[in-house]
Length: 511
Image 1 (cartoon, rainbow, N blue to C red):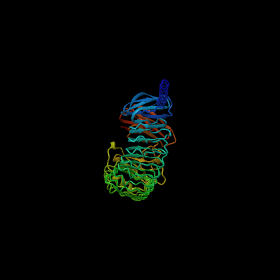
Image 2: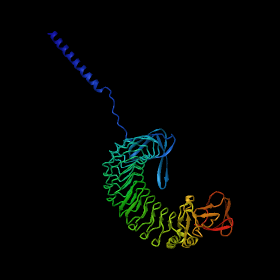
Image 3: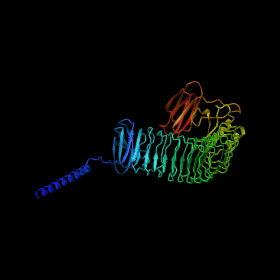
Image 4: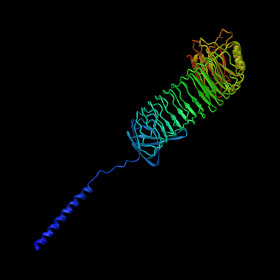
């Protein structure tokens, strides 16, 4: 009986031991060391090639506080009324920790950017940095991005449909997809290599800058809010803006638009120069500035642009130019055409006329000057009517006509082949139709002046110019050796001075 009892106790003990051993084995497996899962800290990581010790501008904004590693704050400066923050580079690897919402790091010579742990990022500026790859796929709240001049070859913004402002100019992009970016208002990809671009989804677009690309067409028919369109230096042959009723500024210079028709009640500024354009039809009742130089125009109808203030139509093939419907005209450049007549009787506000390089002769030149409005000296009215350095110049103006212009307070100039700073050198006219009067030894311009006075030596001999006060005191003496000598009058008081060159004296007005 005892043997049976001992056997039973032994069996129970053995079973309990085995059970405890198995349980123990399972327990140690459960608490064995495991690799802990790391949680990334919010922030932006940068790597720079800037020299350690460099002090550069950086602007940081965050929800709550932020910390920086690899850089340290140095100072704040006020620049043009705006506060700028500056940081010193301590090492190449930089971390900006926190819930970052905005970062300005232009000119930091960045070679890498990691914004994957900045989910609240709304604005990022990294203009002019190294060749860097940018990935904003984790920044779905991004509203403003400036990444111009970063040597980018690709840019994927498919996850950034909240963008309102994008500037990726001056890169190496050959394509850019912004489908579904319905909130984008300002877009600039100037100076890339983009040949096609879809604007149809950008229904909120107000400003579009695509200069210096390879675009052969632009369809703006869905961009009803467009106000500014600049597409200079592409390969456009046509441009339809029928649906763009809000357009205020249009620039399409340096394309190949042979014929152009425009009807816009909102347009204020229009540029279509160097486009090989042969015909223009314009209805723009609010147009203020019209630039169409360097084309093949033989006629120009301005009758539908009654508010025109400035016109640049030089270097075309115009034989006539009717300005009778432009009463607000103040500035006109119509040089280098084939004009035989110009009439300013309907332009009482005009005070700047550049018309050299035409065929305005004898009575027609007299008529031009006769129709010029009388100005006052403070207007500094300028008439550049001849280029004596151009052998093909056909304009002619007598001394008597120049004097009539002067009586109306117009200063008359010779373009002088562009050798002299604007507006050229003073012109005195011809005493006959074929003989230019002898030039003074020294030409003086501009007079009146506000800052500098230029002396042009018309002889091969050095000479001396002396500036006197009205009471006869010698204030300045200048030896005129070079072709053009500049006298700095900025420190002189407003008033009247006498300039004596050799045996000639001139009254100089300083304003």
